[in-house]
Image 1 (cartoon, helix red, strand yellow):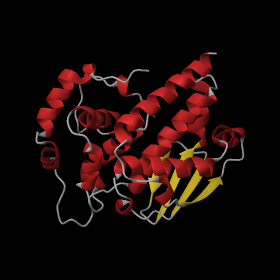
Image 2 (cartoon, rainbow, N blue to C red; image 1 turned 45 degrees about the vertical axis):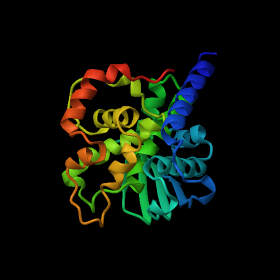
Image 3 (tube, rainbow, N blue to C red; image 1 turned 30 degrees about the vertical axis):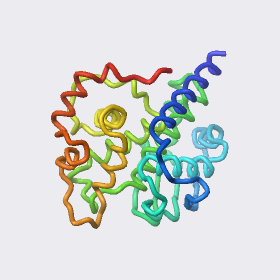
Image 4 (cartoon, rainbow, N blue to C red; image 1 turned 180 degrees about the horizontal axis):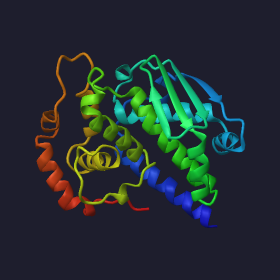
Length: 254
């Protein structure tokens, strides 16, 4: 009974987020170009087979997550980078997951050790673990499809990672209600992500889309945080102050 209630709450939260944040996309599922998925499980142990047991059809999960990620990042089908092939590998290594390469071919690695460890932490709850797998996948697939201002990760990686976790949050695979005051918008990952989602929900609809568009590779514009003000009309420092003061007012009912 507990697991059924939990699954219902998780699905409700995901549907609420998707309805409020992706209802304005013009991308249709029938028009979306699915990449070819080359799935490889290099771990022959029990923790390697666990991935298949939880996801059932990993290729289908990856393809569907590609589409969902693009509904956050883009508004028109012709804006989406041409990702033709995703080579997805499950193997036993220290880490969580990582993306490598650029379109048209993307490599994504996922750690079977991480999977096993988290599966045990959830008391072997397959529903929770599937939520985590897709959450991690959505982060890495955002890296596959997002812009990075022409390969400037070493300079603006915090924003790039923040966008990836923001997409994960907007799809319902990271707990938006867990945001806490403190830190900096430069901290990347969850800290930046929740800030970006807050801007999307409270200040400027389409913020994530426009932030990603401001990092186009060939627009002859070097990305700086001034882009945030150009998008929202308010400096990123002032937005951060507002966020710190008001974040507790914005929650997702679960």
